[in-house]
Length: 469
Image (tube, rainbow, N blue to C red):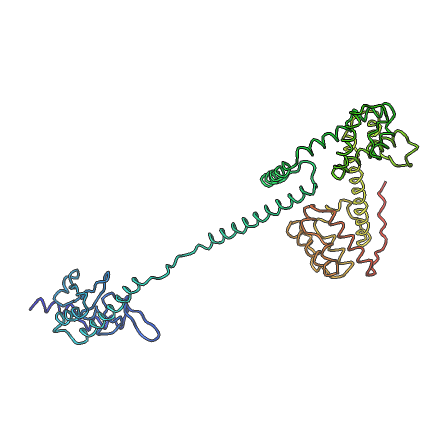
């Protein structure tokens, strides 16, 4: 009796509830409408006097662990040993039997505790049944998707598709060009595509008849270099030209043997059969011999026909029995390339001088001949457009910092576009700042000059100061 009195003094439910209700409790959760309790043994989940597991020395609740329901009971007699305060009783899996167990163990408890335990058991049993049904039901498995991997794979597929289409297009175009005879030398094509087309081409060539090959070889042998040299040596090249044009073999000897006449007749028949295939070869021979004739007989060639000295030397060498040298053609091509390059440099220098003079006339001051150094910071261009079209660039930076100088160039490009310069005549900022395309910058300024002239702007003539002696 003394022990129970001491325990009752220690476990005073009203005092505990007054402290919890009016002061702080770590399990209390307040919302706008109601107050809840997060204590794991709370039977209803609400924070009130009857449902609080701390302020009731006699308390019961239902908990579910791994699909099994347990009845937890707390009494005042076990308050002195907190580790053994809750008595745990396993309930039957059958719902009716579990309800009977609750009635048996809570026979002398309050109706509120019995009702709340049975209500909690019912809710737990219902969601366990739903869980079992969902497990038995076949459902789609939700799998997380890595967006980064998905994007990478999609980009790889797109690149592979583009590469496949490009390879097919190259093969088709290469095959068409080879069939048309466009390429006669060696070109740097993709190795696999080139080998595949060559294999197809070899299969096509193998279908040619051996007889046609022999006939072609026999026809070429009639115009070998030795025969041409003999014609040039004995001076009968003009008869050979006429013989080829007339379809004759150039043989004027009427005392040949009968066997030779038969062979000539057979050769003529073969020549007539292959006339369509060998027209180009015959024309080439006629052109070569006619060219040689023009060199040997200058009176038969109009003035200026062989104007290139290297070509004349090459034709003279052929007429004298020599061989054709490609160095003459290479020298002529190099000379033409040098002339084109010199003309381009001269035109660019003229444009540079014109732009420099126009800038000096607009600004009425000296401008450095090195336009890249003069225009790199963008200030000269901004000042120029402000003179042509006032207030085009409001703020011109004089700073030496790279980004501000590039900003000046950007202001100028925006101003000339607003002035009316077409987009194709403009340039990029790096073209001027890094000097990547100075001819393009100069060309853009020239188009701006023409546009200003069309709109009636004419700067005053600028006279440069004479250098002091």
